[in-house]
Length: 174
Length: 96
Image (cartoon, rainbow over all chains, first blue to last red; front, side, top):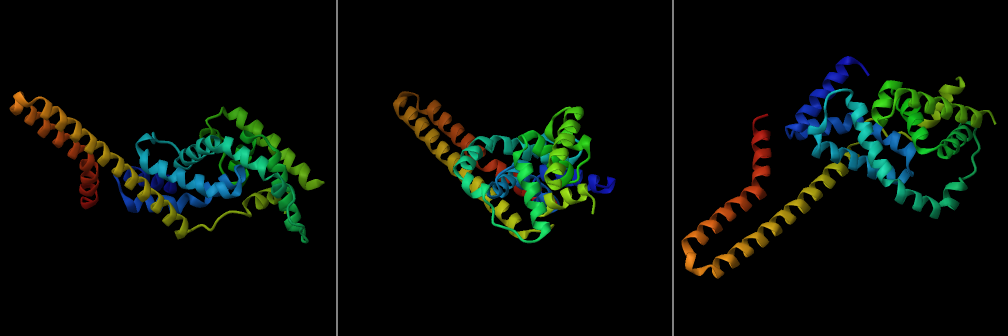
């Protein structure tokens, strides 16, 4: 993300803080893809959009809590907190739906097999590791940005990403 | 395509479109619903407060002037609490 985009994001958050509908719409448009991609990677697919909506509503209500820094990392930190909050009920649903998630439809092309292997390996990672991998690979955040979003030490995040990447690589090589 | 690029491509495969007006409308609709619920709760709380103050006024019959002032003050407070945030938002929109 360029410095100009960072400045624009900060200006949009400042305008949202003052109650600007237009700025809020722009902020949603600019970041919904990344936030939803992240959440689709770490929660059940059907819950991801619901949590993403809650994330943006929290932005609208609590824009005053933004204290500078990367807006994208701030958004991801809200999404991460919401996802963790939803984790308990999600685990319950996941247990109930194991049969559905565990037996995906057969695929023919290699690309689909790759995707399936990565998704299954990703789902097997611990939640924090999965979140770090999604932020880094799925959303293109730098390691410091990912650490800021997850509120974890940089070293821990790097370790999560390395271990997670190794597991995904192994899944692709199988 | 190397293995890391394959991982990235696989993780981004389910990404939603870069612009998704439907999602934005869902967010706005949900926000309106929440605001509506909040206003209803505020109005109900205001109604209860007015009822309580009115009951106190009636029971304090001999102090009609003081009780009436208290009632008026409570009404002003309740009205302010319910409508002032919306009024402030309206003013800020007009000033843009």
